Every structure is written in C-alpha cells, then in structure tokens.
Image 1 (cartoon, one colour):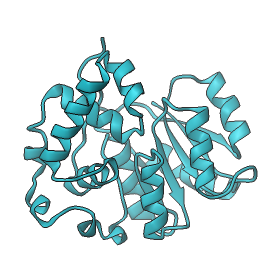
Image 2 (cartoon, rainbow, N blue to C red; image 1 turned 90 degrees about the horizontal axis):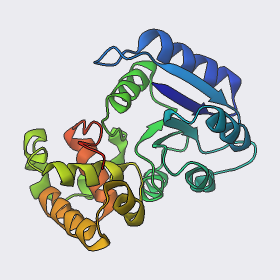
Image 3 (spheres, rainbow, N blue to C red; image 1 turned 180 degrees about the vertical axis):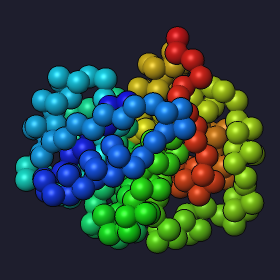
Image 4 (cartoon, rainbow, N blue to C red; image 1 turned 90 degrees about the vertical axis):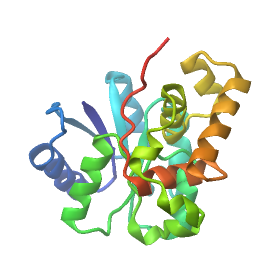
Length: 223
C-alpha cells in the first residue's frame, strides 16, 4: 500500500515515516510504502508518478497553501484519493470543516506518539479516526449512542459501498459513476444510511462511523 505524506516540515516527515514504516503493520500484513511531498505542487508530481497511491496524509498549513483551502485544493488535484488531515489546529470547528470538505479523518499533531500510532493503524485498516476532544455526542442524537458496530454492519452491501465513498469525500455524482447507479438511487441509499445511523448529514455520518469504530473495508464490488 502506498501512502503519500504531504507536510512542509522535514523533521515531522522523518518522524512519521519512521513510525509508519517500522512500527505499524496492517492486519493482512500488507507492505507499506511512504511517499513524501513538501507542498501541493510536489504532491501532484508524486501522484502523477505513482497513480496507485491509496491514501494521503495532509497537513493543512503548507508553503503554497494555508488552512482549509489546502484541503479543498488537494481534493481538486486528487478527488479519487482518500485524505486524512494531520494538523496542529485541532479546534472542533476546524475538524468539522475538514470533514465537510471531504476528509476521511482528522489526526491532531498534538497527540502523543502512542495515540498517533493507534490513529494511523485504524486509518490504514479502513476505519475513520476523529479525536476524542471533538465531543461527538453533540453531533449525533442520544439514541445513536446505542448503535453497535454489529448494527452498523446491518446495512446492505450497496449501502456500505455508498457509505465508504461518502467517507472518502466523494460527491453524489462521483458515487453514481463509480457504482453505476442513478442519482435518485444514490439519494435513496443515503437516506437509508442516515436513518440507520440516526444522523442528518454526511458529516454526522462520518462521526457516527468513527465513534462506532467500524472498518468498512474496500468496496464490495466494482461494476
């Protein structure tokens, strides 16, 4: 599995590279290969040379972009690559906005090494990671707190496919294209997913999956 780390601090890249390549392992023992870039321009060049990158780890503050505009620009460059934000700005408003803009998770740079390791392992295993400080109980109604990972897996295979792509930040039209479904069918699946998770928006759905600790895995099938 190829990962792309986009951060303008070489020392942080070196430390995270050491953590990922020497202290992390996936359940299926897949090999991890970490690619690095210092800004979005360099990241775009790396992606062109390695189109099989499976996940991007993105700092929000780079030399050529700052703040959430960084994420928005990266989603334009690589709409098909799931992205997890790494940032020292761990304010709830920033986390919410990052998820709204298509991030598949958010790992604060301020966490301890052990927490960073656990967060990366969960992300690489297909889970969504959001920090505890987010206060997710304010996003999902109290009834949803009783939802278990097993009940979340009660979604149909196609609904899980739609949810997986939603978490990756894909818009409805892209989900339609990838799953060869009509827009009305995708909207129907989203409505069913929201009802099952007892949420009202895409952002709340991401939080619900993160809180449940469910690894959705790859799409069940591609047309």
